[in-house]
Length: 238
Image 1 (spheres, rainbow, N blue to C red):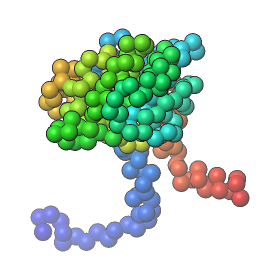
Image 2: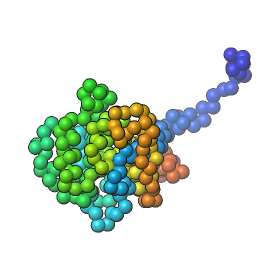
Image 3: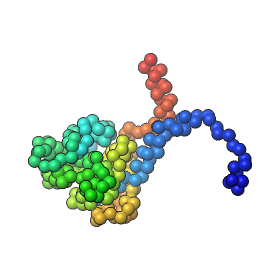
């Protein structure tokens, strides 16, 4: 204890202690982690980042996610996007023929895969119907597959031309994924483990460049304070 300096008492500074534990700061750190971690495992058609927005029709299909989810809301902050949702894990592709047909009319469909698991026994929560739906859409138009799951499940998506590993189904991952797809930030992530995927091997990852686009971000990421902005908001509203 003496060698560790415990004989020199240093009182805790309680100034702004609660702000130091503020959830906002934790969210900022999580966002930064996902921005560094999210990995483009395949980009054969160079779709990511999406460069042209003016004359391109883009749709989003979220699988195993409700309407108005975080990811689709972040996507819509970049351009006009028609959204589709399949709230459960699909079993048969025939049940969703109408959604597939409507989504496929877009030039690019961003298909996000949600509610994955960490169990290899159950294919990490990836249903055959999920893969079948993505394949059906990819036969008609260009597809960006955004997988919010761990790298081990990437082996199920090897046959698609554009695939991104999002690691976790968290709001901060949704924001970072959207920013990478639209070139707000570049991607430099690498797969951190050995997987059975040819496209997602250890230390593999395709770097993408930032297009310096502007979108929504946490105030702390641009040197501002959410707490102070909320105080200003309250003054204006009341």
